[in-house]
Length: 174
Length: 236
Image 1 (cartoon, each protein chain N blue to C red):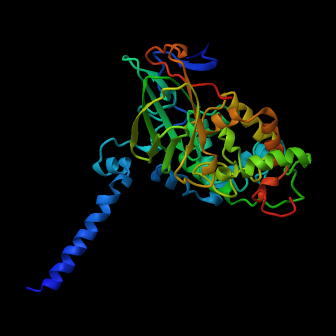
Image 2 (image 1 turned 180 degrees about the vertical axis):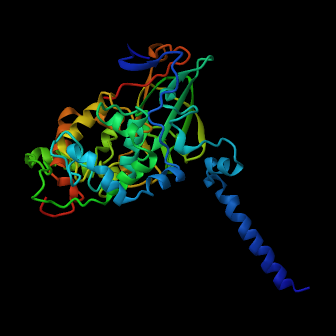
Image 3 (image 1 turned 180 degrees about the horizontal axis):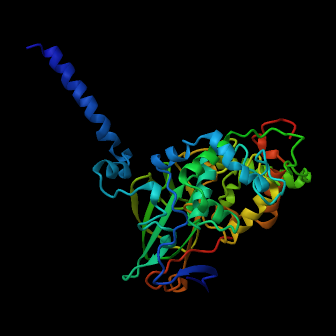
């Protein structure tokens, strides 16, 4: 047996295994979802049907006191532009993209949610403190990328309005 | 139905329980639609467009500042507007019946004709474009918004979607558009009386702009300053 060839083969194999083993955290979750075929959504017809139609965007009050936020990222805006959420309750974020890859990053927190067309990105957020959290897109998405910013307005729990079923909250554009 | 209530120092948009899905436009930018909109016959379109001359001008430049110029406009943007007029998603007393009277082939042909018209000046024409040059301070405000937008407020630069730097699919070129028309549309988007922008980009941006900024932008485009990328010449 040619041990030299075996050694080269084994070390090459190990080197190739090291790449995913050390970089697994960089593999995008939405990309995996897209490859698995689950969670698929047509980015061209978000406005026609499904949970991302205009009047379903914004904050929805869930029965257990938590809230669900639905957003669309597109060149070069997050819609709705300003999100109103209560402090101290779980926020289930659902975001999808209508065109390119975007990344919703909340300043002052560790939250960064990458979204790409064709999948819905899910994230669990919670804001212990009230205040305005500026958001930016941290994935280069085109000519107006640097101006793609929006805001999460976190208000005390008792000041967050009680939304009935079918109602969606959003703060007024300043 | 929409009602508005005040809470936590912010206005909350509230949709009623039984609200059906609010659909801004039935247009989707699928490959079939893009192919259908781009496959028109410009010569046949030129014959059909004779009936558009009265308002939109024989060369695609309107004699009235509140009516849009169509010369050199991107095909997909005119196609979408005609489809929206046809489905009453964009309201216009003159344009809705006209769009309804056109067949899909007519629409593609007319769109193809206007997209081929040149935007260079013609002294024989009675066009109002380009209008008066805006005052320097206002032009600077508009140029800054067109070139850079306002990152602090989350307003993207106009030229990143409306050209000439970049275009999004179906977004109209503003390079040779009449100022009064631009202002009217910005006001209508801001007040949400025009609502056919898919996924709300223009309703959001127009509402973020102040009234002065909307006026400055309209003057800027109406004066023909949008023909070149803002900041492209050193003399500006």
